[in-house]
Length: 436
Image (cartoon, rainbow, N blue to C red; front, side, top):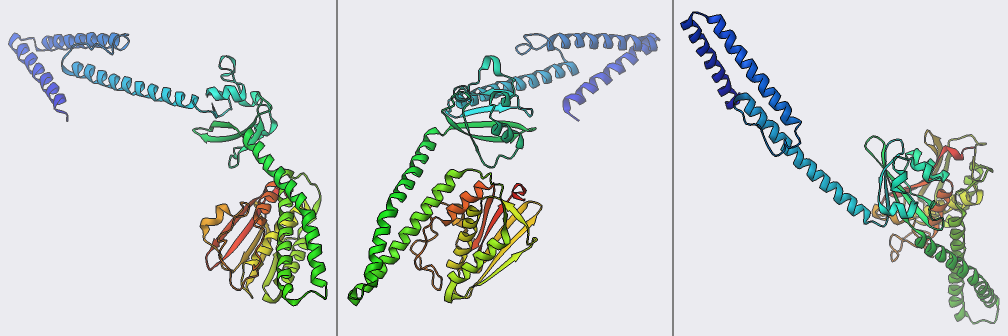
């Protein structure tokens, strides 16, 4: 027990003993005890009134009632608690003020909403980019002010893995990238940044690549024609055959690169496919696997197709895009798997959707490369030769970038697993929305 509490109890006990002695001396023990208890009760009521006045006084943080005993300790303890609370409140207010000041300094819009979507607070950039007004919009539903249907669907879906791009409701010429973070009881932080310049530069890059690729096709076709003519000419000296063959190979590589650049530019700008055509997947995969066996040639890879669905099953999508994506993944497995290696193509459906897996027992690569594999022209090791693999001429470095955009256009995703010396697995995931 606390020392001060023990002391107070001792004082009360001695006071009781004193009352008993006085009562015995006067011969009125009961009356003396009653009078003492009544006096103690009055004193306690008086202290209670003082406590009530002090608690509701506007100056209670600066003064404390003077008392002693249990009541004195109570006053002092409450004062300490109040003082600590005031200090904590001051620190919190200062911290909130600094957070708001720093957030207002951001060029990106920040909006805080409750679980219902009503706006509690936003920074100055939100007023500039989204047109929110503090005088009238506080407490309004954010979906009533940002009326883009895609934003409303994105906001209510609670699936914020990928950002959303919309036009600003306040300045339609601005393109905004929106990210949302959940916190608390389904409260949300909405972040929006202006990516108009980035989008403009990206469009310029796509236009440049597309235009240059188109312009290069004609001269390459002419060069290829002359090279083939020279190769077939009987009077060409043998010493020229080797350089002509090398020129033909490099011309072929350039044509493949241009073809893939044009294909990538096309798929990048295609957006989400709304194709309603029903595509039978098994015949497509069967054809790709047969072509892959031809591509394997003398290396004699074992290519096996496991198809777990009904032969007549079909899915909705763009047939050319899907063919391009599936063939890129399967041909890559042939390129980077040594001779007589095993390649397994598996298509199945489960509770999450449709899936295509291409797994090989090739050389594999360090998993550190996985986040960058779908970037244009990215290679795990550009200087490395893969012995025993059918990749002597390499590729365009655009295959997986094409796959990524095809999957994006079909609302799908790409999963990659690999380990050096143990092969690789590429898995395409499709949602049920593409099921026919």
